[in-house]
Amino acid sequence: MIWEFVIGPVAVALIGGPLMIVFRRFDRRNTEQHGENLNVLKSIEGKIEKLDTRMDDHIEWHMKKGK
Image (cartoon, rainbow, N blue to C red; front, top):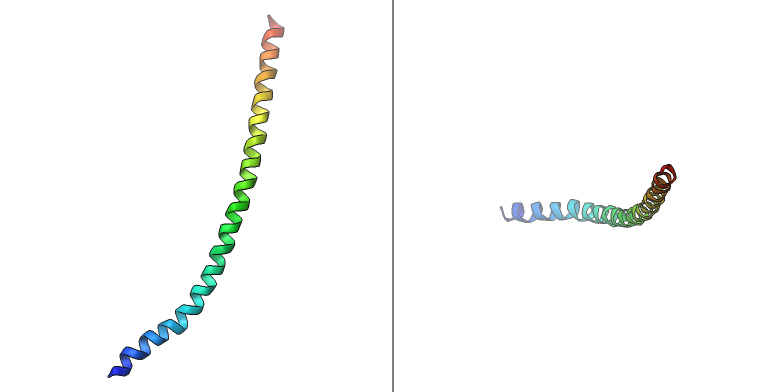
């Protein structure tokens, strides 16, 4: 009867342990990918801000030219 209390946790540890190692590796890769994507998004944001400023300046130029 005591074996029931020993075999269950041992079986869970033997199956769950390696799975947790695999999941941890995926989590680490996912975190790295999120960091890389954040850098790309910041770069895109900077380019959009620059384009927005240029468009505003260009529209102002047209408005002044029309007067």
